[in-house]
Length: 72
Image 1 (cartoon, one colour):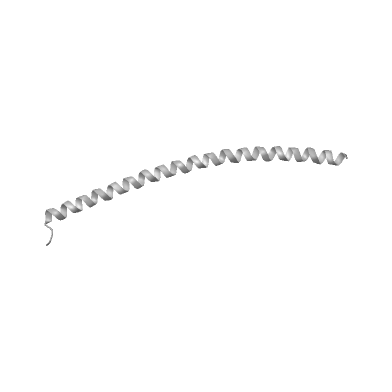
Image 2 (cartoon, rainbow, N blue to C red; image 1 turned 30 degrees about the vertical axis):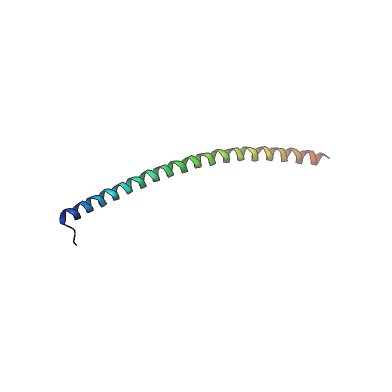
């Protein structure tokens, strides 16, 4: 049994609406993922800065220990 023109048009309209809704969901998820990655990136930058400070402190401590060792 073949579908009538009205049924086909209704099916096409529903499919078109479904496709549009899927694209909206994808856009929303893309935005959420992008925002989440930006938050992670900022956090990594903060951690990297802390490691840089620790590295500087260790370098100063090593310099101090080298001077002490050179005296003895």
